Image: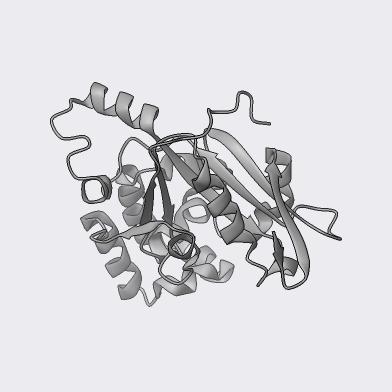
Length: 238
């Protein structure tokens, strides 16, 4: 692919490639259960221009009933989990080198994967999805109807009462202030106990550091269906 005079190629990659760019992603923790890495290489750039990481999906996704009506209807917990694991993978990370911004690297990675996905169904859940249109522009469909849980709404209300606006959580000084407030921390713990994916984030980065993006921004879900998948999970993604 050539864009703005720069040749960009997408090739199989490794988590070492992701490690080069992880600091530029708004979620600090590493992706869980990775099964495939794609790396974008740009002419003249020794390190990766961008990386896409595909993982196994979470078994709990409030958006799936709206994304694929009837897909899991009538299935028990065990059968539902088996179908999800067999037919669905998740684009968990798409991150680019800031030096390649504007070259279409993220879109190239997403389109490359969607052209020959591991499974018929693909999803991505992004905290910045409403303001970063790369998933939709690359052919995915945004799923409407995602709303914050009651526990998250109560946590946000508690933060507001303490004079903390959610967008301010991007500031490390504000996060430290929250950590010193015992009442806010109790409320944060209550929310985290019920939030999908929070446990892994807490284990790798701590309660506030690991989960503040989920508190600050509502997630958007994006889905894509290709009934002719082109591959299988890579073994020992390293």
